[in-house]
Length: 149
Image 1 (tube, rainbow, N blue to C red):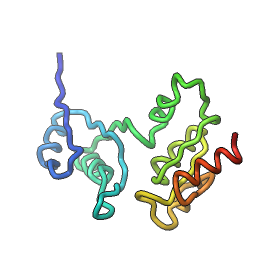
Image 2 (spheres, rainbow, N blue to C red; image 1 turned 90 degrees about the vertical axis):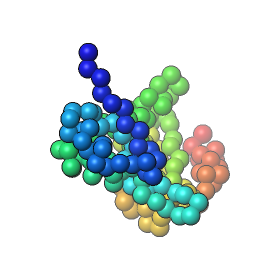
Image 3 (cartoon, helix red, strand yellow; image 1 turned 30 degrees about the vertical axis):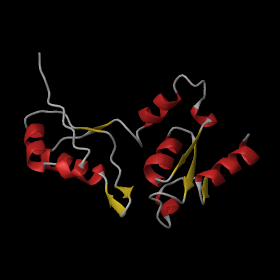
């Protein structure tokens, strides 16, 4: 029986590149919760796990298995058991690529909100662009209630 170490590097303060790269070079799989470029902190935006996962992929000549957004499996699993097909679902998010782009790649409508980690012109970063861009989550919900139900 083979055991692989489980690497928890969600807190970047505990991130130890050299240790992780050695484990990966020895055959441990690289599994990432997501590859977001940045996330919102109280003091502003900070690098997310994406740049570090990409660096580990490059350094160890391996490919990470991503289990979260924007992977299609993530969105399809979220819908499983709801009775909704992707084309009947709507994703509201502040991350154009991971939230909106990922949802739209499985056939959902994606609404981008200008809150959280949104940055000006984010909606231009994906193709197709978001179905809609709203100032806030409540504005997105209002649009859904008034125009989509």
